[in-house]
Amino acid sequence: MRDYYISQKTEAKSDNLSWFDAPEDIKNLLTLAASNWEDTSKSQYYINEALTRSQEHTDVLISAYRYFFYKHKLPPALKVAQLVLDKIKRSEKLPEEWEKLKPILIENKDDSQIRIYLSAYAASGLILAKLGEIEKAKVIISRVKEIDDLKEFSAEVLLNVLEGSDAEDD
Image (cartoon, rainbow, N blue to C red; front, side, top):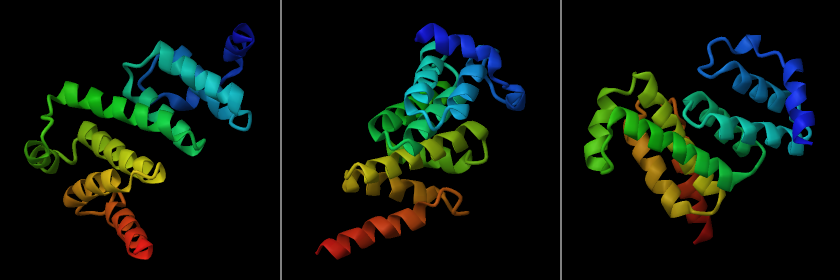
């Protein structure tokens, strides 16, 4: 079966991914995942192949966590979002402690890597909320809200939903 999937790679057209930072074979796998979206077994195979072959590419990691999220496969979505966060923390030499990290994120929030970090961080909060980890989600979303003055990451809306769900539970 693996050979069948791989042989389809030549049928994939990844020309529309010229901006995408990944080798052509990885672009082909991602294109095949998208074109086989309705067949979860096939599409997930292609996503996993892309991850196996190229975990150093941020674009591949982002594609994978979004794929898993929209396929409602939340634990792998969270795992891959965390890989994005870890990768950017290493490359940008970001501190672990929020009080040290926050001013760096605020000062550099227009930098592409920091924007990707914030997006993945917000996504991890949303995923945690969907997994029922409401308190952990609130911490993350509250932090993103502190930085999200332009409301680009929907942190305020999500936090209102999460806090509203607590009020309804009482």
